[in-house]
Image (cartoon, one colour):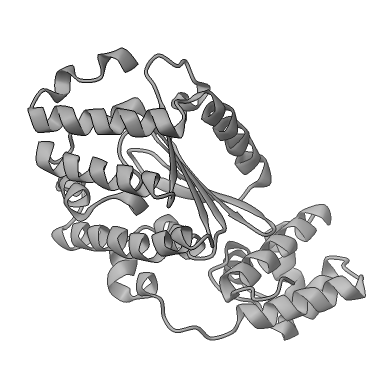
Length: 303
């Protein structure tokens, strides 16, 4: 158990340990439910992190799973108590945001608040936690046929709240933010020249003052990562989680194999991509081109 762990991190550690122990014991969730005289939904909710297991339930479950090591049992019981610590209801847990955000997005926000490193790769638009209000609003209008006005409003507000929570942690050194974007992200004028210029200036400012590190994947680079959907990798003391997004949905993945593959691919392309200095130069050239009104012809040397 790490000192100062939050209920979020402690709950994640317990549920992953339980799931891995169940799989090592070659038991299904249904087998566990029947042996413990629980409902199947209870087992699923514990392993998904939707609910925290009580210490009284944990001990017989550990026995069923064949865990006998006393230090390990003590550590998991301690984590369980931390996980059940009552917290003030977070904004993303309120009814209006539960209706406006997907379950995977709510988990992403929860993990963002606890992560020590965040790596983002985007193929279409600026990552949500770095979007200006104008850019976020312009982007959300593209989903008017899929989302209600209330849902769009909540998603725009969620981006603001995420940004205000995460960036001060990055500026103070509590979290590290690495951003890798396709060149098209820095060319696509979402919201029009004025809105997009403001967004680019915001990114350039964050990169210049060291709050984030940003690199561009230029069109000329034949990088395998460009075949992936946009994703975020969030690191904790004991591992990583992967948030992956496509045009049709999003998902939170905690499988160690999947996160490791995405991390390896991110790191490989990060080395090959334009470095921070060249990326900031490209962004400032785009800003200048937008202000001149000839952004469609700008920065051809980089392509």
